[in-house]
Amino acid sequence: MPSTQTAVRPAYRPYSAEVARSVRLSPHFVRVTFTADEFEHFGTARLDQRIKIVLPHPDGTFSDFGQDEGAGDWYDRWRALPHAERNIFRTYTVRRIDPDSRELDVDFVTHHDAGPAGAWAEQAVPGQQLIIVGPDARSPLSAGGLDWHPGTARRVLLAGDETAAPAITAILELLGDEYDVDAFIEVPTADDVLDVRHHETARLTWLPREDRPHGARLIDALASWADASGEVLARAAAPRRQLVDDIDVDLELLWDSPDPADGEFYAWIAGEAATVKTLRRMLVSERGVDRKRVAFMGYWRLGQAERIE
Image (cartoon, rainbow, N blue to C red; front, side, top):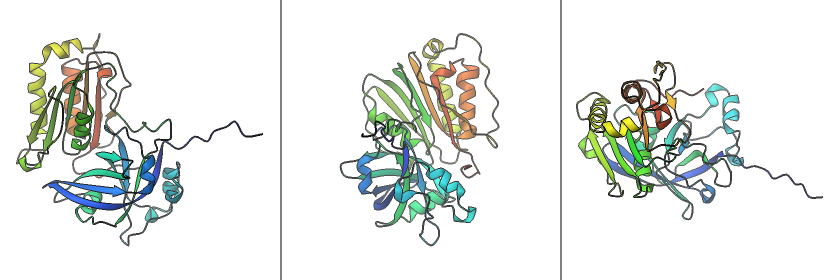
């Protein structure tokens, strides 16, 4: 008799891809378009969908961690490798995915002290091989890498630095005009302001940092927004005083992504961890916004590489 069991595809799996083209969008943004036949099955949620970019060894090779099989246990296999044989990987966001053309866009932030992924993107040329770990649309769990959970909210705040720009701009492009949105993106310079399509009900403010400290303009902008949005925040307030853990962002991961909740307001904030911690305190501790209505993601820490266990 035929088996009644159906194999469940892994939510996330490796895709062997190659560079189709690379375009410099601004002084600090490079968009790399990848192609792979298997991208016809890549998850299409987009929004703030996280993926892993697995970089080649200096000689251009990759160790075997199940990439040729599309293995769902790729991470366990990667960890089982001797440390020297582990390919470096970093976390990025899907900017665009087109399963029909088998193309995936990823926007990389580049600067003078760029990490390994940014440095790789600066030199990317068509034909280069790379491995991308991302969602498989055939899996019922393929949206597991999303932290955008607005629930019933239609009044939305989006905020982040240049590392959050791909997610914020992707979200803005996908939101309908039923959403009333304020979005703030801090970028290194005025030349890093990008062209983004969005409905008239969304207000996008770019905040060129120039010579100011990282996060300063974003913190100032959200403080001014909060001062002018008292009624919105009052309706989003928690019923009682909330305790917020004092996370040491030098040692701990700041990542608070609540499940969808009922309510009018929702905030999504990501970027450099110390800045995100300040904004978390501002909205939750000082303004009293219900923690169920705010997602905070410390993508990176100034002066530190991405922590990988």
